[in-house]
Amino acid sequence: MKKLFMMLMAVIFLCGIAYAKDYEVKKKAGDYDVEVKIDRNPPVVGDNNIEIEIKDAAGKYVTDVNVKVEYSMPAMPGMPAMDYKTDAKLSGYEYKATMKLSMAGSWNILVKITKGDKTSKLKFSIDAQ
Picture 1 (cartoon, rainbow, N blue to C red):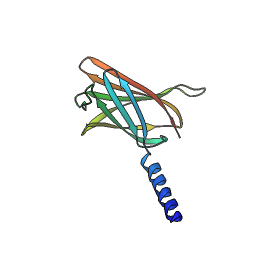
Picture 2: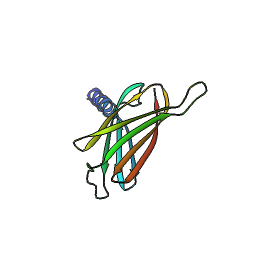
Picture 3: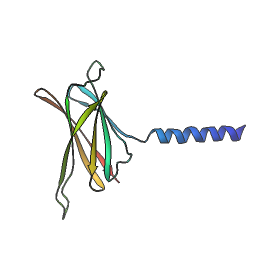
Picture 4: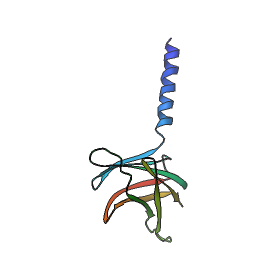
């Protein structure tokens, strides 16, 4: 019985690890509550899919905005700064895009949410492997 219990606990633990595979950031951007998920944790060199959920103050999904993702790596000795942009496309209640990280290291991410003439911004950093 004890052996069965230990095996069950190991399965639950491993399932929890498998489930927590996304890199997640939850922050305010202006009036919006934003949740960003990257499909790799840690993010990797190459393609990383990003999903962005935006909710208003009432907790309702926002689906009528333009979303851009800008990602950059500052200049280093012997290497210029790298700056990239991609538009996120609405799919259901999420905005989706792909970031193509060209090298390992620290990247600055900026999510711009624009409705009319108002832009809200969310900033965070990731370390790509």
